[in-house]
Image (cartoon, rainbow, N blue to C red):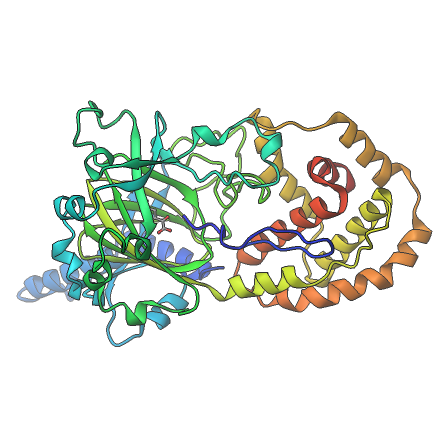
Length: 478
Ligand SMILES: O=C(O)CCC(=O)C(=O)O
C-alpha cells in the first residue's frame, strides 16, 4: 500500500507537487481470446485413426495443460471471466527485464527461494524475535484502506481517521488472532502488520540476513523499500495502485491478488482525498448505480503460496485477500514515473500571487484546457474526472459540496465574458504548459498518464481556486 503516498502533494506558493504506470493491455485481451479459441471444437480429421489415437491424445492433453497453465480463466462473482496470472521461471531473464514488461507474473524458482526466511520466518519464530509490533487495527472492517489524514479534502469528508487502520502496539499472537480476543475469524477486530523491514532492526538485528541475496530485486537503489507483512486469514488490502515495481514474495500461507490494468475504470478517490490511490469500488460487491462502468475486463487473479514471487507492475490496481495465516516480504522500487511526476510538480505554475481569485480561476481553466490540447487529450477527460472521482464520493454521502461555490463557479465560467483576458493570459500560460507537456508525454503507458494528469488537474484547481471549489469548478467550468 504505497499509493504514491511517498510522492507528497505539498503545494508551494507557485509550485505544485503530486503523484502517481501501465501494462500491455492488448496482450491481456489477446490472451483472453486465445483461451476462447482453445475451447472451440475442431472437426474430426481423417488422420485420427488406428495407432495414432493414443499419441494424439497425449499431445492434445499436453497442449491443453500448457494452455491451461498459461491462460486459465476463473469465474469471478461478477460472472465475467478473469485471467489467471501466468507462472513462469525466470529463464535467463533479469528481474528488471521481467518487471519492465509491466505484466503481472508469478515467478517460481527465484532468488527468494535461497532466502533463509523461506524456512526461518515461521510465525512462532517471528513472534519470538518481534515481541511487539506496530499493527494496524480495525474493529469491524476487514478491508484495510489507507487514510492519509493530511490530505487536503479531509475536512470535507465525513469519514474520520479513527475508523481506519489506526496503528497500535500489539503482539504477533494478537495480530494473528491466537489469543481469545478473536472468537470468529470472520469478525473483528482485524489486525494487520506491515512495515519497512529495516525499521525492525532494533528488536531483530539480523533481520536482513534472512532475506539475502536481495541484489537484483532492487531496481532503483536510491528509492527502495523492503516490507514485511504478517496477517491472519480474512484480512483484505483494499484495491489500490502504487507507483513502484513490486516483487512480492510469499513465505507462508496463501494470498489472492486480484489485479486490474491501469486503464481500468475503478473510480479512484480524488487525489486530494484521504483515501488517495484507492478505488472507491468494493470489487466483490460493486454498487453499479454509483459505479456503472465498473467491469472485470482485463483483470487477473493470482493465488500465491509459499515460495512464489508475484510481480506487480506499477499502477496496476491490486486487491489482496489473505487466505491463510500469512507471512510475506516485498520489494518496492520506484518506477520511472515517480521521478517524472516529481519533475512535473517542480515546474512553476505561471500564476501570480497577486491575481484575484477570479483571475486565477480563469487562468486555471485556460491552462488546463491548453495542457489537455497539447497532450491530445479530449476535454471530456475533465467531465470524466468529475464523474469517476468526485461524483461517487458525493453520491456515497461522504462529502460536502458548497452551494455557494457551485453558484460562484457557474457565474465565473458561464456568465462572465472574458475574451480579452484570455488573449492577455494565453502567452503567459502557454509558457507554463510548454514546461510540463514534454514530461507528461513521457508517461506513455495506457491509463497511467490519465491517472497522473487527473491528479495534476486536481492539484492545480486546489492551488488556483481553493479546496471548496475543486468539485464545483469541475462541474461548472468544463
Ligand atoms: O499483501 C497485502 O495485503 C498488500 C500488498 C500490497 O498492497 C503491495 O505489496 O503493494
